[in-house]
Length: 307
Length: 112
Image (cartoon, rainbow over all chains, first blue to last red; front, side, top):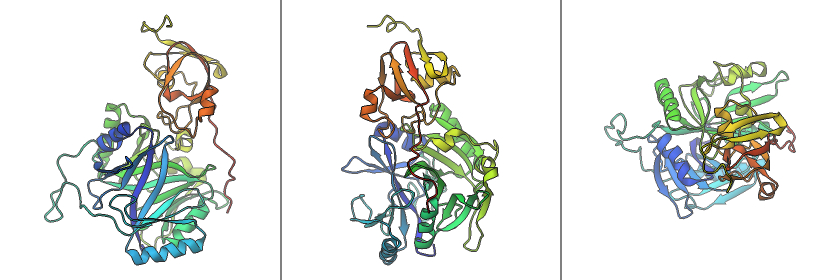
C-alpha cells in the first residue's frame, strides 16, 4: 500500500443474459445483490465487504471484463496518482461521481496488456451485510450457495505483461508477490499485491489484448471449496478444473464458468506477502505444477478459454 | 417439418474434419451432446458461448441457437454458417466442421 492503493474495489463483468448471470453470481456463488441502476446494471458484493458493491454485471453481446477498479486511501492520493498515470503515458479518463451509483469520482486508465483499470477514493459504505459492526455475530444465517465472503482478485491475459506490471509496481505501488520465469528470465506470469494478500491482481502473457481469465471470490475453508464443488454439480454448472491446489500462491481452489463463459474461481488459503519479501518464483519448466499442484499438468482450456 | 421432430430419437452429427459421427440427444447442444457420448471431436471450453474454443462451421442441418459472443461469431460469420457448438441445438441430423477456434496472433508477444 506504499502509494496509497488499498484493495481491489470493483469489477464490471459483461454477461450475455442478466437473469442467468444472477443465478450464477447471486444464487450459486452467494453474492448479495445490492442495487440495479438505470442502465440495467446489477451491483453485488460478498457479505464481508463494507462498501456497497464490488461486482457490477452488464448485459452485452460479448462477455468479458469492462474494467477492474482499486480503492485508494483518499482524494489526495487519487489526484496524485492521476498525474503519475498521465506522466507514465496512460490514456486517462475522468469518470464523474455517480456514473456507478454510490461511487465517487473514478480515474480510468488503459494499460499495455489492453485492460482498462480504475482508481477511486470514495464509495458508499453500507457495512458488512447481515451483521452489525458492533458486537458482530460470526456470520449472517441466510446466505446462499457458496457463501462467498469477498471479491478477492482477477487474473488477466494479455501481451506485454512487463509493461502492465511496470505500471502497477512503479505508479500504483503494487509488489510482485509471485512470478513465473522462463529459462531466459522472462516473466510469463506476475502475481501482484497492494497489501498482504498473495495477489490482488495477476497477469499471464498471452497474444490477445485485454482478455479476462477469471474473477475470484474468497471462501473460508477447504470444506467450503468441496461444498462449492458439490453445488457446481447440483446446478449442472460448467466445471473447468478442481477442487485442487495451486503451486503459485498455494491457494486451494475450484474453477467453473458463468453462463456466458466468464471463468469464476472460489478459493481458500494461500500465501502472504510483506514488502520486504522477495518474489516467490516458479520456473516455466514446472508450469504444470505451478498452476495445478496435484495434477502437475496444464489443461489446454485453462490456457485458451478466456473472454 | 422433419420426420425426426416428433420422436425422441437422437440426431446424427457428422464431424467431417475429425472423421467422426456421434448421436446428440434432443434438447442438448452439439457440445453437451458430444461430451455425454465422450465423442471427443469438438474442443470444449467454457460451454457458455464466451470463449470460442468450440467454434464450428455448419455445413448441413437445421438448428436453433442461444446468444453467443460476437467477439467469436460476428453476424457476417453467422451468415456463413459459423457458430459455437455449445450454443447450437440441432433440430435434425447435421454435418459440421470443428476446430475453427483461432487465437488472434496479430499482436506480437512480449514487446517491451
